[in-house]
Image (cartoon, rainbow, N blue to C red):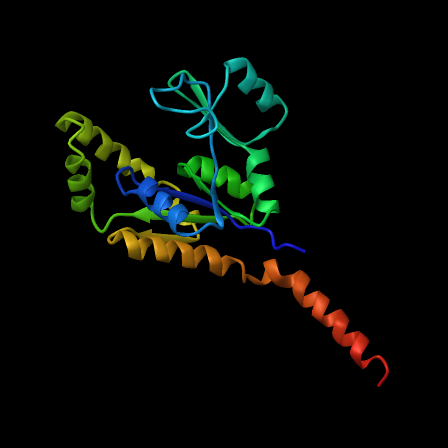
Length: 210
């Protein structure tokens, strides 16, 4: 019987490099799958349905809500965003470790529904480093950077519910750290109880004749 994959939710402050870390993890190891979210916003140039997002109409999204088809969903600026169950569950059943990159409130909802999932929060080495990274992108003006910093103050609300805090100082070390945490989850006692019971039954059969 194929071992079921581990569901991992990765959150963190904006600008900590979550996307870069996940991209490198997927490039390095073929045992991972990145969950694709659904949204009702229009595709941006270069975005492909089923790759960046599943692009749905409001009616399609609301129908899925009624069917309980989302792990979690939220509405931001007149558009829905959500995590479809089907893809995640199919990948987990195939033995893939699935990564969800979402914010804390969505993560806590997934934890409520799937208590065995792993919650990991990514942090920068310091607040000063976070500001430098946001400024270093060169794509936002000072007002936007300050707005993101203000938002970051709230982005860690609820982080005490997470299983691990992982610092992203060096990309390669961070990716290996993330990989190690997820793979260690495969050896949690609850995940291996079936294997233990199987060995017990085999041992009982061996000593039955004594």
